[in-house]
Length: 235
Image (cartoon, rainbow, N blue to C red; front, side, top):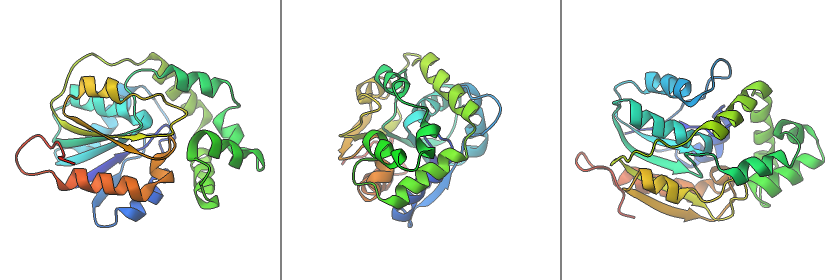
């Protein structure tokens, strides 16, 4: 079973590195988001749908990509067996936007040698983040055009759930210490009633901060899939 990973707002897929190191036995594929062109969810979903094609897969949607996953199941007939949401949201999380607006642009923070580690730990990666994780985060941000980040932020502010429900089995990894996005698992469970919420201790970027714990949840979700049923794990 192919596990396809959609990245958060950076879109590079580079930040999945710590998680992939813990998922060595799984058949994984990272699908980066385009770093140019339209950045609305419809356009991004079209790119992802083309890559998935007719393949059977489990879809992991980190943060920003949660709405892409919802758009895919709402508008495409793909063979997605299960969705794993990670600190995801479907409609604009106002606390997230207000906190971003209260600080310097993310790329500017990442470029300040002394301030960057403090800011990234406090807001995103957690106080236990090691230098390698911070370096990876800064490297990923350098790869993203600032205009693309701005377009994605605007898309977050404008997008809203269509109010439809989907029977596909799903898992939501909810970080216990997320300071960027308020708890959106209830919003997602309204759209995906066959949702299992699993809380993992960590910050918003929980896949990077706690890759081993998240990998265990992901393996359990994938492992409980069978050739029949809707793919809801029994954890």
